[in-house]
Length: 142
Image (cartoon, rainbow, N blue to C red):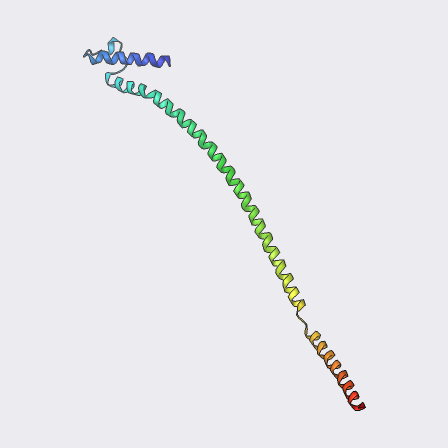
């Protein structure tokens, strides 16, 4: 930093000498052309601002890196949640399929079969016949 201050002082000193109309020739020890000195002074003045900007950009970059890491963690967690939900949906679909087959089976079992209906009809006819015979016997006895 001290070297920069000394250098800036030298450049300013050189500029003030040239601004009074005295032109230093290269043989008298001038290291830079007069046209370049002005741009060098401006660049030296801008050095501190550039240094501060670089520092701020580094801080911003580190913050953005942290945000990227957090976003990557969020993405991983969301992928885990999606996989869990897909597994849950698959489990529910299997359960629904099993319930459907069990309900269909229960409905089939609840419906009376053809032979069961025939059996009921034969039993009804048999009971009716017995009652008819009893009624005829009872009427014939009177």
